[in-house]
Length: 326
Image (cartoon, rainbow, N blue to C red; front, side, top):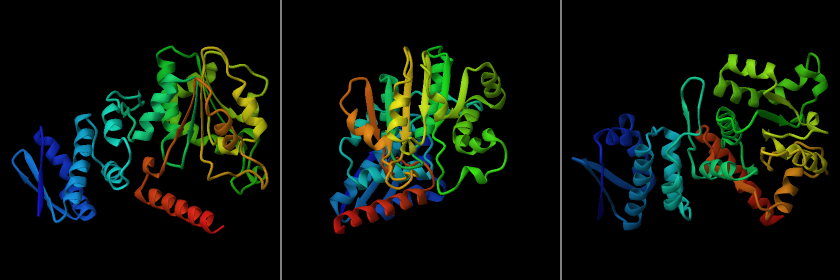
């Protein structure tokens, strides 16, 4: 039997660490096949295998690190800490230490927005340091939400004069013509995730006021043609659905003192068969240009329901099997 101890600095950390009805500890015990008990300011972790105990200790330290930053240990955060250990992610210890304590932005309701995963932390850091940042990865990794948070923060600090959010109006198996209303009504459903993120950050009243002044713009990608965008924070969402020509057009809109963030998931391309995604191409040909960052998210960075992670992993395994036998 192997045993290790972990010291807990503050009593409230122990309460959060264990979770409601000890659910966090039960998850650790099931995952690593160990037992955990508390003795004063220490928790004792024991198990039949030294490797299991060592991995559980690492997961606990990751969880305590999150608590020391003032974060709450919800189920998703605990599972993320466990997955880092299970997948033996290279450099996870150092990356955890470098994750910033400060929030990216404060929402209209006073909620701080912080990176929740190492991938998100790298993404926020890349946006801060580069003129153009690509965020490539599965749904639910916070690409759009964090980009909007960074845009609002830059706008509030006076670093940019405008926020421009855009995405291609490409149908995911549906047709625009079947939607009711005028052109704007037909386009609005495609822009809804962008509206939602802005409402969350600014509140509906402030958003409407900035929209009327023209300091915030939410529009389809086609509206970007022929423009030069100075002093702006521009976000292109669902970029996997751009053509090669659209991506080139968008990137060449970059003006002075501006930032661009381009997000997409190359596993969810809705373009007609045979049409190559502009995002797939551009991350290859711009890979080594200074002041351009490419951040790749994985299923571990998903911050939605656990089932979303499981679904993404299942699809990834299916694709890998298809390539091996194809």
